[in-house]
Image 1 (cartoon, rainbow, N blue to C red):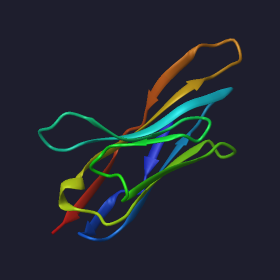
Image 2: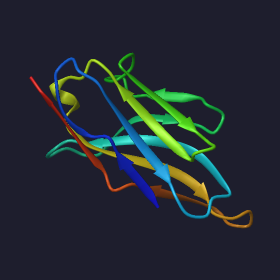
Image 3: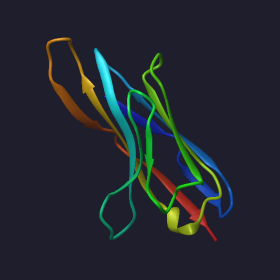
Length: 119
């Protein structure tokens, strides 16, 4: 239902763009977000974006990462610049989706895409 892509291996200082597409029946997508989980650590918020376009970032990525969304394509993006080794993690996308007009909003997670930043 959510498919994330765009991860890979990059050198410190480099950049990557992650993409996430929401598939299936969609009436409305509310908040979308990116989270990450480094080895041995808990999953943490990276960035979120509301349906109105308001954004929120973790302090550690503010100024380096940019979250955006395309409501026509039902996609979210995470542009990551000036990557650091500590950004190494599996990145997960999340979306709060109402599948039908009469349905409630459910939170969906993508399968994760791995980002490795070498020093």
